[in-house]
Amino acid sequence: MLKIVLTFLYAFSFLFLSAQEVFKNADLSVTRLNERLWVIETTDMTTMYIIEGDDRAMLIDTGTKCEHLDQVVRKITQKPLTVVITHNHRDHAGNIHYFDEVYMHPADSVVPVNIPFDGDYKWMREGDVFDLGGRQIEVYLMPGHTPGSVIFVDRSIQAAFTGDAFGSGQVWLQLKPHVAMTEYFASCVRMEKLMKEQNITKLYVGHYPYLKRPLEINYIIDMKKLAKRLSEGDTAGAKDYPNMGIDIACEKPMIAVNGQAMIVFDSENIN
Ligand SMILES: [Zn+2]
Image 1 (cartoon, protein in one colour):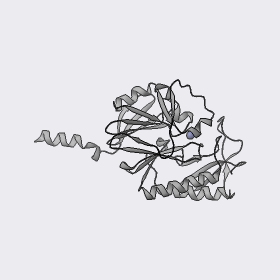
Image 2 (spheres, rainbow, N blue to C red):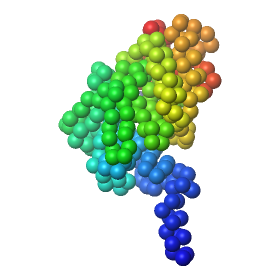
Image 3 (cartoon, protein in one colour):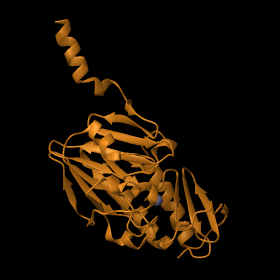
Image 4 (cartoon, rainbow, N blue to C red):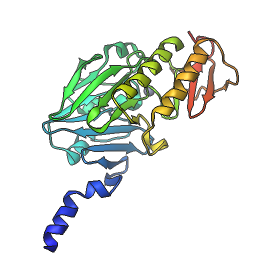
């Protein structure tokens, strides 16, 4: 009897235990967030997610400091793997060379990054669905942070994986090439509608270590209001923001705040 009880407890332990670290090395740690979802957090604050279906698994983003990322993923799942990137920045696409093919939105092929890759870029677009077996992952284009930033919706857990499309507390729109604030405002409007219509309650962001939790719809509502105000030219209260030596940052970045949301923007070229 005791054996049966222990077996039962073990099998359903994911229901009782919240986040649980399952792997760690010098570069990163892997934490199980629920039964078939893991977050990989690197020591330099980049983030990846692994989602598993009945037939396949998906890796969202490929981080920076992650030697042998392919082998790390294999410690978590042995299922055939689909690799996707939320956008084409170095801290999200840094280790694509460990894989044969990677999915990206074609609008991000204009982002000036030099990431060595001998494999195949596969294009994904709004409306595409990755079927992992009993689990569908839907693609939505949300331009702003980059022209081809996408989010992945997983209705089975009422979640979206948003990369940097809405930031991780603050969204960066000061990097080139970014889109007009009016277009980013439109992305925020669509995101709020999507969350309401599909009952999405959790946003797993692109730099999870800063928050250690998913964000909620109130964050998007704060972001939407701020984007609207800036798109209308109202930059009251905005402050200078450091360039941080980033080669693709604009000349005069500024930061504006509304509630939980912050937007870093190109003060000379908002729209
Ligand atoms: Zn980015």
